Amino acid sequence: MKLIYLVLDGVADKPEDGPTSLELANKPFLDKVASLSRCGLMYTVGKGIAPESDAAVMSILGYDPHKEYTGRGPVEAVGAGLELREGYEVAFRANFATIDPKTRKILDRRCGRNLSSEEAHELAKAVDGLELGVYDGYARVVATVGHRAVVIIGSKTHRVSDNVSNTDPAYEKHGYVSIAKSSFEPYVAEAKPLDGTEEARIMATLVNKFTEKIIQILKDHPINQERIKNGKMPANVILLRDSGGRLPRLEEINKKFGLRFGAVAEMPVEIGIARILKMDMESVPPPTEDKAVDYKIRLEATMKLLERNDVVYVHLKGPDEPGHDGDVKRKVESIELIDRYYVGPLLEQISGKEIALLVTADHATPYTRKSHTDDPVPVVLMLPRNKQDGLKRLTEKECSRGSLGVFQHGYELLPRILEMIKSP
Ligand SMILES: O=C(O)[C@H](O)COP(=O)(O)O
Image (cartoon, rainbow, N blue to C red; front, side):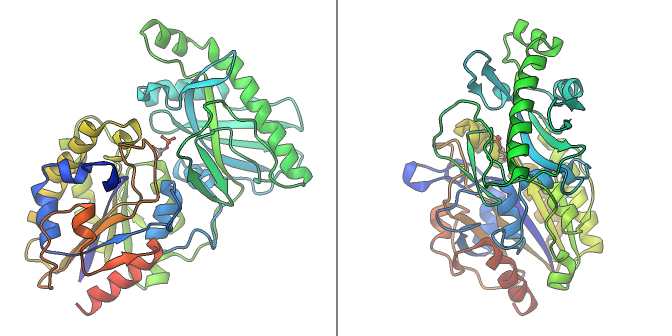
């Protein structure tokens, strides 16, 4: 039996805060899946940890990010097709953001979420290859999707370390696993060395030089002048987080589980993970406003991958962004669009076939909190001809009554599900 592993990014909310997006959404197909499934809940990295998507996705693919992991920066870099010079370069996940240049107060961590990828590419060009003026330091800057970018900071002559803190105050490094902070001082943070080594000190100096220089360069850039003229927020800083100096050395996923894995990934971080784990991929364009077209393309990619693989991991970004923006209406809509344009047609295509469907999330992004939280996420597993829990809807509360119970860590999920598929 084959498995489609569908992950709805940040779909879960916090039930204690009021009705969740999954409860509010009209989603007949996802509810049908739940009604034919065994259900449960899952802490994706662990109780008390509000993870970023990188560590969470690693975990729900069976890899404990507290064991062998090197941070989101290198994952985003490989997702953007960049290689790192180990020992001399460190990669960061970066956000073009808006600040008051005088006080460095952050006005928006995502430039109002309306920076187009084209604008971001132009801005990145203006700072890519920047010489930092100390320690033979330089920066490589590559824009990815919207306000997102990868920044690699290196030195031509000095060894550097990735053990430095973020300039983005919204996330905190705990080793290589980054935690979303529930509240933070909205100022560009100074990078600090996190150990006493010369290499960490050099990297912190280079990062702070980078921040200083790009604020000067970006402030008068024509793209920003045009944005201000049109009443939009300028992209006048680049916030850095989740430094890492090399890729994690992980067993390939096909070897780990003895099965062939494929992946449909929309964003650089998930593309990076799929590349690191050597998953088979069908590339799809980044998300657009036209969800009917987007999900048709993703469904075609799923079915193609399913022909030549045993498990297809599908990661849909949809509900995460409106969760971050605190926009419940859009979050509910994003679930309804996935239901209508992806899940409905998928059910038609797999009906009567020996295909199982697992639906879950990588973390909660409650619209009431505007950031990731450690809340457990629903898990539903639909197996042909298998016993069901008789639950009615795919929601956090319904799933808490399911027979799968509560997974304490995401990395426990796949081994158990694959076992159930082998002997249903
Ligand atoms: O959208 C993303 O890239 C991340 O999931 C959230 O990151 P952000 O807090 O920088 O938007």
